Length: 204
Image (cartoon, rainbow, N blue to C red; front, side, top):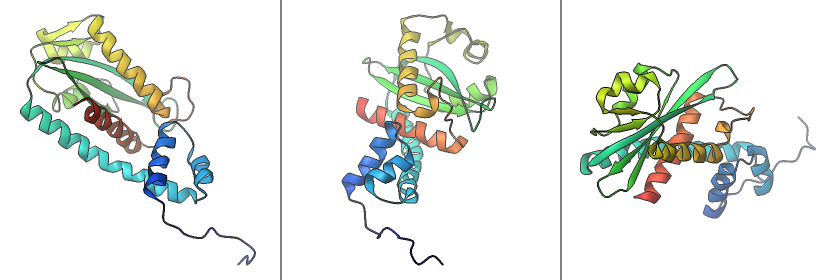
């Protein structure tokens, strides 16, 4: 055993420091850099970041409550892709904006390993039933939504493209030219749940 090796003395993080971990992480600061800023071990930073998993349940509960108590008039839906672990291992993020009768918005997502009808149908299980769906020319939309779907670019699809742009800017894994992809499907899912839960909480 190396008796000369120095160890950091354990201390509890303050609530402000815990919040700073999430803030710096959302600003694409690396875990080692965050650890240096707070003068703690990297595993301490990782421990607190893993708490992000709670947002998945909170997101699902929030969407379920909204679907039961609010009437929606139409959906706008789109998808983007990213990679898990390495390029060539694609994952797809389906995002949707549900528009209420008063014009306010609810944001939803679904993460899948395929871009096909089955993945879209899985997403539909969490979407509200609406008479109209605005989307692009992806064949799956026409197959799943049928006559409800408007398969063309419009001011509606511009709105969801803006959402996707915000996703890419807030989650470093999704940056188009980034080589730093999420190492796991589940971790990316938790990051997305965190993003969408906070967006709905602010907008509602």
